[in-house]
Amino acid sequence: MKQIYIEQLKAHIGEEVTLKGWLYNSRSSGKLVFLQLRDGTGIVQCVVFKGNNEEVFETAKGLGQESSIVVTGSVKEDARSPIGVEIDVTGLEVLQNVHDYPITPKEHGTEFLMDHRHLWIRSKRQHAILRVRHTVIKAVRDYFDDLGFTLADTPIFTPAACEGTTTLFEVEYFGDDKAYLTQSGQLYNEATAAAFGKSYAFGPTFRAEKSKTRRHLTEFWMVEPEVAFAGYEDMMDLGEGLILQIVDRVLNERRHELEILERDITKLEEIKGPFPRVHYDDAVKMLQEGHQKGELENNFEWGGDFGAPDETYLSKQFGLPVFVHHFPTAIKGFYFEVDKDRPECALGIDLLAPEGYGEIIGGGERAANLEYLEKQLAHHGLPQDIFEWYLDLRRYGSVPHAGFGMGIERTVAWMCGIEHVRETIPFPRMLYRLRP
Ligand code: 4AD
Ligand code: MG
Image (cartoon, rainbow, N blue to C red; front, side, top):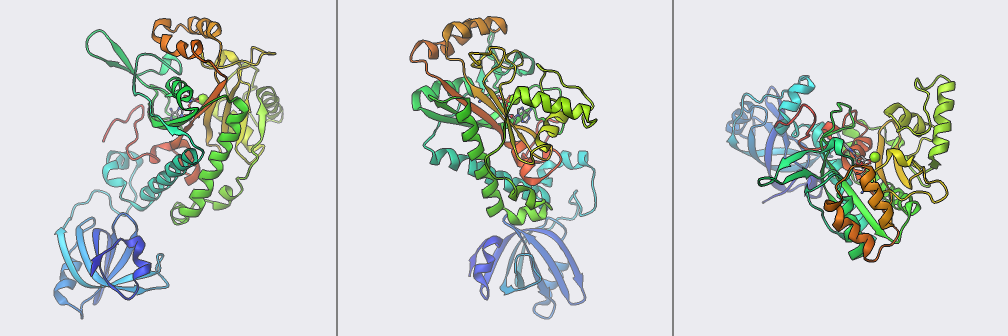
């Protein structure tokens, strides 16, 4: 007799096993008690028959939701079970009998559930979403590892902004020094790319964004590749390959979870390369046409940044993720390379996900010229002394290079087909949420 996990049960039909876990739900009828046992890998129905052992039967009947238990029994094939098996219980050990679990199978409001996030993550839907997240992250890591990238993580305490000073979290740092929570590892990635050729960072990033949209967290995870001797077009190739690998892995490894989430799987199966690549100029034209047709309220003007309705409209025209490139230099970060023939356009790329999930990748080609960057720092009001190390990358072996950042939570929300990014991370941080 050995302890195994629920997701392995199908390989143990006919054997006696011990399962350790928590009571997800239960019901009894006459001489039978049905225990829904969860162990983190799945849920299995455990059937307790009074005639087998009266003491076990009475114990099972008295168990409340989320009681911690150890169940022994034989594994029986069962065609009606979602996992194909159930347990015929012979033994039951109770570690803790619980009777006041706050989250019951009835409906609860989102705020209540968010306040109980530490318990809510045990529920079927949340569990499924977080397992998809795991698979997305594994797909991301495998993708870059298999392409020969070196993982080189970047600091979280930083001395200056990367993505504009309006969304910086400031932290006291021993006396007079101020530190800021990183908005992006990019600037450091540019250093590691010059050391390793191809590198990536994967970690939490922070934005003091006062937006309450369904796409914004104040703390989110970003994977950021950076490649030496590469341009913005190479980043569209790299990003497309990344998305295709994620979709493929999620479809192959997380079918069961997608079913629990009632995800329309055909929408993901339709995701095939090549993804359309649209110049910002042409995107603007499409948006203006959309306005003329009455499909967009706002009449978009060249020079602006896309709002959520614009992004949704653009991706709807294709039914695929869409790259937009050549954004106006004026609305982009200080570090972008510009189009030589049209310096008002930066070599930036964004990937807009379908189904209204918005921008999931942002990046592009970095300015390689020292003098230009010095001017840009001054223009953006950034202190040059703090960026001297960054400028060194242009003094010592400057090469064309490019990279991007992909937000994990928005990508997971898209894969799962869920409304809000707050459910895609174990413990979300938002404008009005710092607990639990
Ligand atoms: O477009 P962003 O701001 O790009 C950068 O930070 C670059 N420096 C990255 C790079 O080139 N290495 O952010 C990149 C992605 C977005 O496309 C989005 O997926 C995600 O990060 N993101 C957020 N996700 C959740 N909540 C927020 N507040 C987010 N802000 C950005
Ligand atoms: Mg962006």
